[in-house]
Image (cartoon, rainbow, N blue to C red; front, side, top):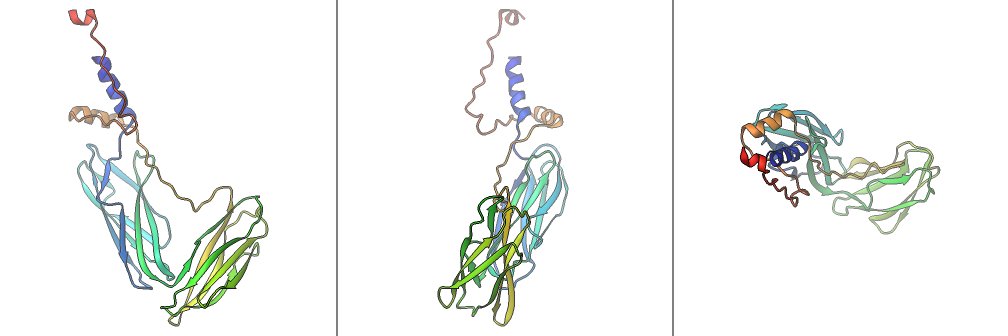
Amino acid sequence: MCLFIFLLLLVGASYLSAQITWQATEASQEADLFSKDLLYTFHGKNTGTVPVKIESLRASCPCLNASSDKSELAAGEAFLVVAEFDPYEMGGTQRQRVFVAIEGQEEPDVLTVTAELPETITLSKKRLYWKANSEPNAQTLSLSLSESKGVELIDVYAMDENFSTQLKKISANSYTLTVRPEDLSVLRPAAVMIRYIVNGRSIRTTVPCFIGKKNPFEFSYKPKLKRLTGSQIEASIRNQEPLHIPEGLSNITITPPESSEAESEL
């Protein structure tokens, strides 16, 4: 029987799900063109039995600021994370993330904010990537202007001499844009500038161009289970809480050993 309890403790000591629980991890709102300071609120709670510390909040873009009303959370304590988002003037659907680093947790919790603004310009690709030292093949994207907003294209050009652009008009409000690198051994970030006018207001947007070994524009997040600390194990035993068996191990059955004759005599 002792061996059975030990195995359960071993499983619980190796893994534990996150202590922070969120009411929602995504928030969206509609806004007018040129809107600023859009506010998003995320409600969180320490649902564990031991204190939790928020180590940092990191935004995915300088256009996003995030703060929390608390950094140290007692068991059962609730808190808020407020994000302030300044969308780019180009409009359309814009999405950014807040990474919440929690003490003892290998991966941050991810909060996503989305702003739904009227479309002024539509790009089939919003960023371009080339693998370093490969063939410098051109990439083509489509560019469409909003007819209802009276958008007028001014010019398009590469902001780095290692890239060249070619713009071809397809119709009154649509174009194809071809971007070609010269040397894919030049490992520095660059961009293509697009300038246009909306209701008499000049707007600029860029298409980032990156050369590297890995694509920096790819984002993936797989939450990981974390190890229990000694204090967390003690708290679980003291409060007689069931040990959490992580997903993927739920099909494992631990059978307590049969008592030996010596144990029976005791």
